[in-house]
Amino acid sequence: MTLRIVGINFDHFHMGDLLRAVHDHPGAKIAGICDTDPARMAGAIANFSIPASQVFTDVDACLESAKADLAILCPATADHASYVEKVAPHGIDILVEKPFAATSAEARRMIAAQSTTGHRLAINWPLAWYPSHVTAKRLVDAGTIGNLIEVHFYDGNRGPLYHLADKVEVTPEEVERRKPDSWFYKRAAGGGSLLDYLGYGTTLGSWFMNGEEPVEVTGVVDETPGIEVDQHSITVCRYKRGLSKFETRWGTTTDPWTQQPQPKCGFVLVGTTGNISSYDYDAFVTVQTRTAPTPVEIPVDTPLPGRTGPIDYMIDRITRDLPVDGCLAPDLCLLGQRIVDTAFASARQKRTLALLP
Image 1: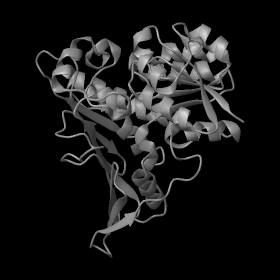
Image 2 (image 1 turned 90 degrees about the vertical axis):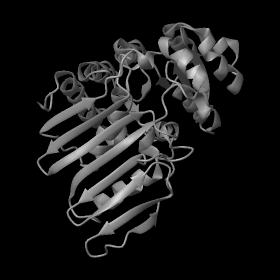
Image 3 (image 1 turned 180 degrees about the vertical axis):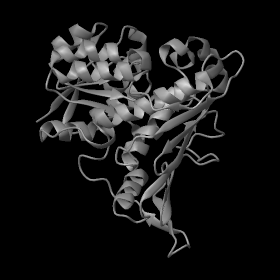
């Protein structure tokens, strides 16, 4: 069985990476691509030899022609809900590239639109596939560090315009030239490091904590003259079990996929009897316990078939008729989004807030 997959809206450069995963998967094929600006599809057309008959500027025309099983959506954050509402009536599964949405209200619109179709809605968080974090989750669930009481998250990169699909680098001069026109730097489009990266931490953090809700949230962001969005945010969540911290940063010294900056990008998980450090791209996690205080590096687990990445995962879910689970499941992602909403409001109001509904 070969699944037919379409890519709709190229606002986010991750579309190129996701289409490459489709192109390279033996169980899938690119059945069509769509964007209102044909120029933004040029790279994908060249990279994957997509014929003109499968290139569209209208969503309905694309879906009617492609007869797709799955749609990948990569619009600007503020447009996630409207695009899900466009695609849902066509009755296919939908994979939305992170973050979930600009607000919880929009996330609920996405859930409502797709729930009436009986098809899957999944939110892709690239960090969910890193073997280090998957291994850390297994160890937490096994009780290796007792009961989890703290999640510490730090993540980001040099900035969202420093790289294109396949991590092709852009010069600093080109970054500055592109900033005025980029949705990443526009508040109305859902730009800023908080909305770009905080959902990673709060969604995976909620996954590590098995869906526990924080009692209250405090968010703080930087305020750079001439830039209308944040480039650095710190969020503190108070849970019944303790405090957790989630920090996002555009402007790290290096990108973590080439050289980990300091602080290192990833998670530190603290339990009642020990802790685990799980950093992005590492081939190991480090465990320290009260009974064995010398840190030990544990090799990461080998990803299982159907768990190697978002495309492999969605193909497995569809072919085996299984529900979306874990970090991609809308209900868990909605909790992560509620924390993001609360942090965003807290930063605006400059005060601590109870978790928003």
